[in-house]
Image (tube, rainbow, N blue to C red):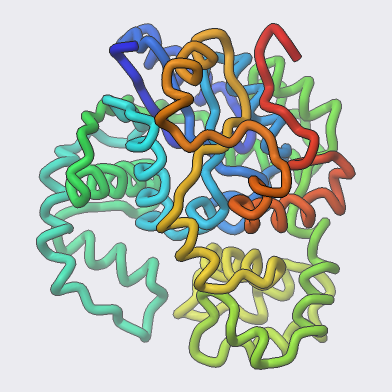
Length: 364
């Protein structure tokens, strides 16, 4: 295969904008194989995916992606820079030659990425502000506006990783059209409203057939974990900083639901997204060494593929660290994933790891 294209996605859930994006890539660039690196059951902003990773992988393949690889939790539940670092690490391992991402505006991404890399040594965190606010101000000082432009910010981070690590990867951008938003779809789902206009028919059928998930479903487990952990245990959690464990202990006792808890804990220094990510780590009792291990030893877990994807896998199975099923050996490699999926299973009641095989279009 000579044209291997890659995208980074959450498909949370797969909506009409995603369909237009995938169709545009195929019509414009005619890749031999299109690979999506997709977040698993927990997503970048510290939320639970509304549909499990297997359902989302199936939708992605049925709606145009050739191969779906899981983005490990250690990469997926991260701020933009680390999210991009992990995603690009996997796409480089997959030997893609071209990355495609959506953007709200056409920019000189290579120039901007290199300017940021050069200027990064001068960046100083202002601890009176949240890291997100500080970073936005920093980008603005370089002439880069990322306010309410999440795809543009991720795009800059993807290109930064390509430049920083000298990956042999080109990139193309597709201008996002307004009117399609996974956030608005998720909000409608929370309200019990129909999303049939915003999503492909297959997505609508999947949503109607399955339970959808939010933090409210898992808050009792988080509450138990915080109450049952002592201060030293909480302090050892990945990304726990500056005595925040004391605040968690205090506020969890008087918060009846997850949003109330976030309201009580948040401050100028901690955005809700950062706190949601931290609560994922708390819920799972994630330690720094576990995250570092995944960055040092990345793996490629296959979630789904079609005939094109199968040909790619067969061609590269000897030189890629592919995981297609989970036994004892694989469970050691996927330790964080298995723990995350066991928590997800408490609500879904559906197997997420052991006994699961990738979705093969036309076969299962």
